[in-house]
Amino acid sequence: MSDDAPSPPALTDAERAELRRQGILLTSMQELYNWGRSNSVWPLQFGLACCAIEMIAASMARFDIARFGSEVFRPSPRQADLLIVSGTVTKKMAPQVVRIWNQMPEPKYCIAMGACAISGGPFKQGYNVLKGIDRYVPVDIYVPGCPPRPEALLHGLIELQKKIRGQAISGRDAPRHLQPDAACDYPVPGFGEHDLVPPKNPAVWQPPVLTRKEGA
Amino acid sequence: METPEQIRDRLLARIPGAAVSVVVNPGPAAQHSLLLGAAHAREIAEFLRDDPGLQLDFCSNVSGVDWLDREIVETIKTPTPGPGAGPATFAEQKIRRPHPGYLEAVYHLYSMALKHGPVVLRLRTADRRDQVTLPSLTPVWRSCEFQEREVFDLFGIVFAGHPDLRRILMWDEFRDHPMRKDYAEPDDYEWEPTPHGDVLAKAKRHYPAAEPAASVKGEAKP
Image 1 (cartoon, rainbow over the protein chains, first blue to last red):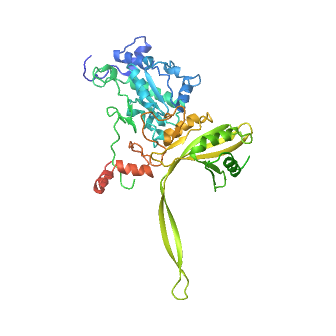
Image 2 (image 1 turned 90 degrees about the vertical axis):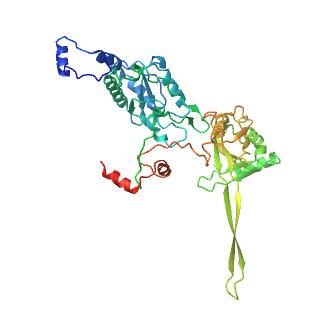
Image 3 (image 1 turned 180 degrees about the vertical axis):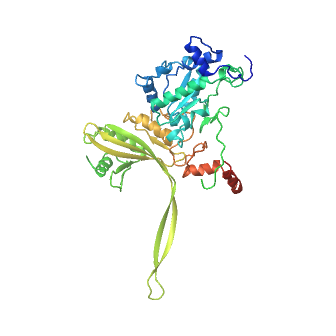
């Protein structure tokens, strides 16, 4: 495969579906690869706070995350593809979360579940809560809610699958694990005298640049 | 159960030299407390636990209070005779004296055996900078162990005689005491959609307002 942008498909989706009905499977390496990748996203069995209860509910019979191929919650980060940061990340816990993320092999994905994991949530103004796990870990999908219902988590998973299916497996848009020079080690913050050191990973997250209007 | 005044009188009779006084709660709860001098606190605690009339065998809660340094202003009015037969005028004189702050540990005691309580104990440090040591009551009530560690972590009161005095919530390398009133939190503000109060002050510091002309131009843009 070349590194050029993919040429427009010769067949439309409708034509391809029609061929499939006739017993002819036309596909590409990329489609096959992403199909397999997106339908067996194994999450890490890892909960931090009340969002974890909803994550557990999503894995149980009523919501049944197995319908989307993600029922295998792995107890070891070495075997997991997906880190669901389900709950409040305190500053004392943040280095451990980053360490777990580093221990997961590529390809790996991260879902920030709930207001706390996204931004600190109701504890944003506190001294001991990380203001969003995206300061240290690249987050693929944000699932808002406090806590999000299991359906919301399932929606987040479906969106992640869509994102995986849409990825090119070559070229500059290729996912991290297919780029030879992409960083796979994320620096683990240390415990400082007043805060985590460093307070954020600038390669992953930068504070928003905004201009405040006077009076606001 | 005995009133705090009765407990105080018994303590003073039993333990000579002990400093015990009643701190009155003027609120509707009227939950008065006993202020203990640090020197005899352990002895008093053991008495409260073992006395057959009290049997305060359970310490349910240990908390800390930070009292800042403050200045007490006293106004003294001295009457001076008015001119002639006129009414006397008052010369006001204001005396300011500093009132040093202190850290306080508050213990809530109950009796499981006699089903009464709470008896509230207060212990105060000498100041809030370097003389912040109080006797630990963990040897008397085992349930104080984690709570005294929490008070040590968040307020910085050092409990002498505690079996394992380490930080319990924050990490060991942390140097501040977050529940003290003069705690300065790390400056990691991030933009929020509807800042108000203290958060608005932070927003103004981190995101200075645009120049008036620029902001008008910015509003005109889509």
